[in-house]
Image (cartoon, rainbow, N blue to C red):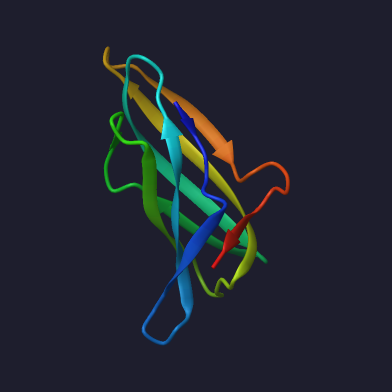
Length: 114
């Protein structure tokens, strides 16, 4: 499995307009024998961290993964650059699993929050 982040991600806002998280997503491709993956992400911006995990396994028929990453603790996110890291536990048809990681685009090494 190979995962990536979309270069632009949308902020999640509460009723007061505060950015409380990120709608994280990106393209995903699969190797033969892989059946799905559970994906977790960490997005960091100016010392504020948002984390999220897929609600279940993303199946190998999917070409895009998506999840909500919510801010931990106090502080908020804003429009602009941020870094992102992801980790996936990838399942195979024979019951085995492997761990795959990826980061936001390498050059520049950031995603844009909108």
